[in-house]
Image (cartoon, rainbow, N blue to C red; front, side):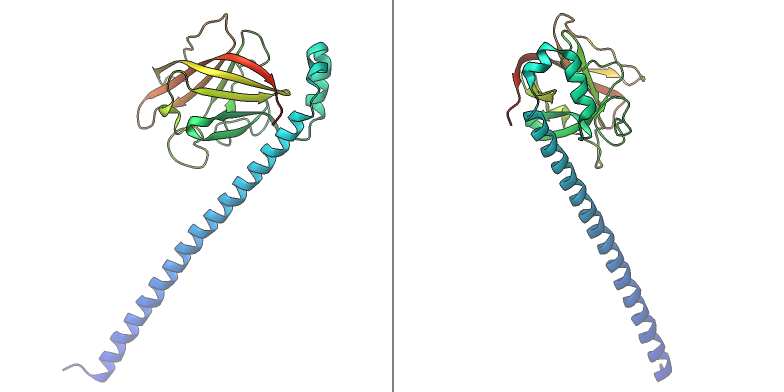
Length: 217
């Protein structure tokens, strides 16, 4: 027959387990909430930077840019906004600011990356090449690129203009560290590169410029 002391000891141990369990649940909840709040503020900061970028684009004198390319470079150097461009892919809900080549934030671990081999959208017959992570995680900005199809629309706001593209080809390649880009070199193009999740393949999305218009928000 159990003594009163043994019963008290069991109740004490049970109480300790309940306290420890409650603390673990509380800590886990705090971590989850903290991550949610952190991501919220990052998203809010991103929205603010994109909105400031758009406002800046509206104020660019595109007539001056077209007539004197030197002025365009001066305006780029004077900008206070971190982003050099914004890419919008309506079908998969992407609207992301892009950092210029050479910037600390122009890498796939933080952002959608403009590859060194890329030319900017204003280069005739050039190829604006962007790479991004797929899969999971906050920086997996291209996680839904696999859902894109031919004739889907993509646009890039850059230098006071909106460059409108239409997808013309999508294909897979082996992930080897280099990407074979098949495109019409007589067209101005935009190329997206990302990994096909859980495979050793990469998805290549080729789109061609169909229209360039002055950006007005």
